[in-house]
Amino acid sequence: MKKLLFWMVLILGTMALLGSCAKKDETTAAAAIPAEGTGTTASGTITGSTATGTYNTSHLGEEPSGGCVDNSTSISNHGYPSETKSHTKKFIITGTSTYTVSQVGYSDAACSTMTSYWNTMYTDFTVGSTLSSLTAGTPAKPTTGSKISRVASKHALMANTTATLASYQNSIGSLGTLVSGIELKLDDPDLTTQYGIVATATVSGSSYLYIYDGNTTDNVNDWPTNGTDIWWK
Image 1 (cartoon, rainbow, N blue to C red):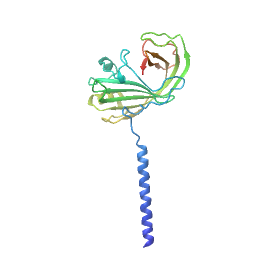
Image 2: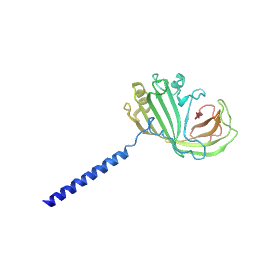
Image 3: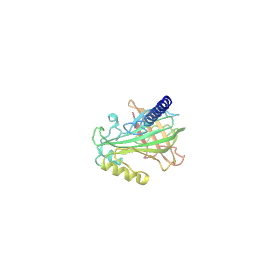
Image 4: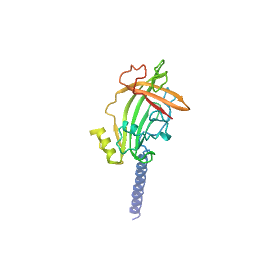
């Protein structure tokens, strides 16, 4: 009887220990997703540049608080459905050779009620040789920069209204199925390296980041007439 009691205690104790370990492992694996989705936590500085942290885009050179843009033309140009009343677009440096471009839509003009986000995560961001005597153009850009290359590797997206779900589902097609309010992660089907130019500057006390990265061959030697993204913080 004593032996039977001993073995029962031993078995129950082992089961309790295993259950405890399983719960601990499960808790560890369930990492929280940031409010604006996977890939939006800033970290580090891009090797070979001074670019670090989070930069905002704006419409017509404005610097709205928090990067919140409520201009209807900008909203339409970024492909949001008509119910979207404001949006943000951020360039977030996530490591020494990685960054995310995060686009978030809101149902109000103050960027407080999120209806969608689409985060594109880039890897292998490399800053190369220096370029000088670049054409400033309009809007004005630095005349000195550096060659860059990068790869769009992953996407994380979420939509929680009928219109945004339809819009995003139409964009991704058969690559995945969106469920309202649930983040969907996708590998980019085209891992082609893109090349371009990067430069930084200080404008009226703000830090600016200029990036063109739309070439499939490494022959970019000047800013293009169109296609350069201008970011500020």
